[in-house]
Amino acid sequence: MTGLPLIIAFVVAIVVMILLISKLKVHPFLAIMAISLLLAIVAGIPLKQIPGIIGSGFSGTFTSIGIVIILGAFIGTVLEKTGAALKLADMVIRLVGEKNPQLAIELMGWVVSIPVFCDSGFVILNPIRKALVKRTGVSSVAMTVCLSCGLYISHVFIPPTPGPIAAAQTLGVGDNLLLVIGIGVLCSVCPLIAGLIYAKFIGKKIKSADELNTSGETVKTYEQLKAEYGKLPGGLNALAPLVVPILLMALSSVSSMAGWTGAIADFLAFLGTPIMALAVGTVLAIVQLFTAGKQKDFYDMTNDTLKTVGPILFVTAAGGVLGKVISSSDMVNFITAHAGTLEAVGIFFPFLLAAILKSAQGSSTVAITTSAGIVAPLLSVLGFTTPVEIALVVMAIGAGAMTVSHANDSYFWVVTNFGEMQPEEGYKTQTMMTLVIGIAAMVEIFILSLIF
Image (cartoon, helix red, strand yellow):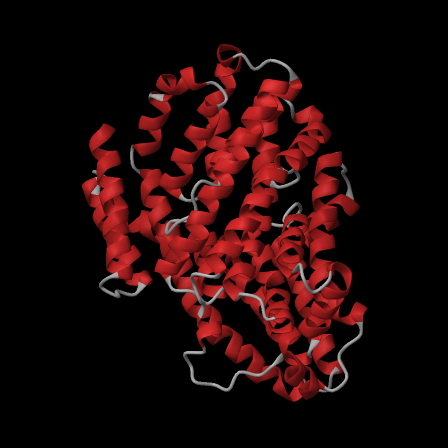
């Protein structure tokens, strides 16, 4: 199957999947896997290839973020159990004040995701988010949306994240990365504001599981929690498991951008991969655990962490299967072949193209790189010739590549599960937030295109 019937089949599949999960209460893992299999058959993928595609999509997700999620969750568990997360929350509040925790976590995410993938960044910063919720009493959902928003914006706009770098290289402004970074920072303003406003709005409408306290556990105040730990860890000790991995990934990105070679560059590249960087953070967390005198809880903490992340990993991997099925169908080829019909919309062309690819196959990075490859030969036709104009095209592609995050996006499941929300709540929070910030970003980019 190809052409418009395939697009219709994809839309129907997504609608059926949402109904299975939200209305019939089918577990997301089973619903996504079943829809992926049916869509593969309907799309005309040869039957003998389907098992391999499913296996590849499933294992590919574990390869990319599986270990990262496990290590990040373990670091988070240690930060919570030792009181380090509460210490970090206190430090953030002293810096920005108790009246602005949503803005604080959003900006924190925006900075962290410049060198770090948004999936990893959310896992790393989630303990601070939870502690800030306890510390300030603000909506947990609002804090989740703000953190996700900040991480996502810099993930698609600002090098050295791989997507924007690849787009800049493909479109011919790879030697002007400083310009791309500056334009990316500028284009972050409107979506950050829009995301903050939407987070505060939706936080009043939806409650997450930790706010509803569906487990029946007694809810403890921040002061009660703090009293249980006695003396909290020092600031540097609390920061180390989070900051060191971020610095290692940032150094690796700087080394790559600067074109460094030799043993030091290889060593930085080794330590700067998310898996190794978080492995270093895990070692520092274990040191923190022993320093706090809680080494007897080491085994139980590890076991509890694996139990917690298991469902997250499998649902996330199922989303990877759906994305792999779609990318293996003829949908991307069809979109590419008919890209010319969108050329008349100018700066909105790269945005719409990336948004279609993002919504279809789930990966923002794939949407960015694919869109850049399609747009590159059309730059002169579209009238984009100067470095600033081309940098704005990179931004338009980035804006499209976050519009929207839904069930076939691993980040959707990371945010929904770690934010303790149901899938239907994820559509109202994560999916709608990415629609809001994508449109806000594109409005700003369009205005800037008129100026420059």
